[in-house]
Image (tube, rainbow, N blue to C red):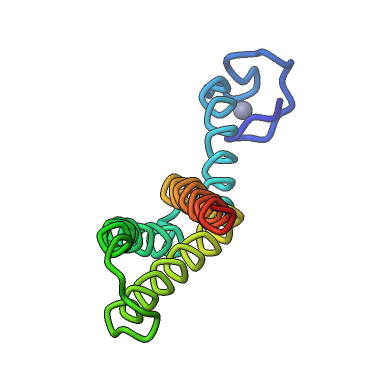
Length: 147
Ligand SMILES: [Zn+2]
């Protein structure tokens, strides 16, 4: 271990320099810390994840839209409206919009989860919610198609 003051090579584990008497222990203690700080700026703590936030916002817009679309379609299920009725077309549009929002939310969630050194909470949440929603919708459409 080299002394920080005079550069004298001391025995490993020595607390004081045998040449000049300055403390060696402190230096030894500081070294890994400064190395840590170097790694800190190099790698850094998890940063804000804009992609994850965008994914989460889209998810939060898509969810109530899904609920409206589903409730709306249930309320229209008994009404005998033909397919060119404006309300049916509006419902189709709402469905398409919900689907697109969930899909984009899912893709952004995947992108956000894959980003290095970013907070992943919102991305993973968006990923899970949108996967569940889309699987549920696809399942319901299959059930509806076979019924
Ligand atoms: Zn010394």
